[in-house]
Length: 79
Image (cartoon, helix red, strand yellow):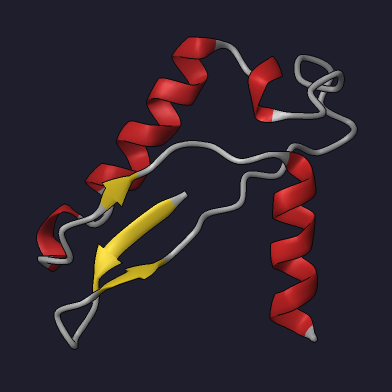
C-alpha cells in the first residue's frame, strides 16, 4: 500500500500490484506476499520509494496487502 502527496497537497493512494508469472520456477509457489523472501520484499519497497524520489510526491510505503485485496483493486479499476 502506497500513499503520496498529490497536486492538491493531500495524501492519496497510489497502490502497486506485484504479479508473479505462473511459469516462474523459482516463485511458482508464491500465492501471497508473505511467501516472498524478506530480502525480495525489502528490495521491492526500496524500488517503489526510489522510483519516485525526484518527483517531490512524499511517498510513504504503508505496508502490504493480500492477494484478495489486489484482485479487488483490479476489479474496481476496470468496473
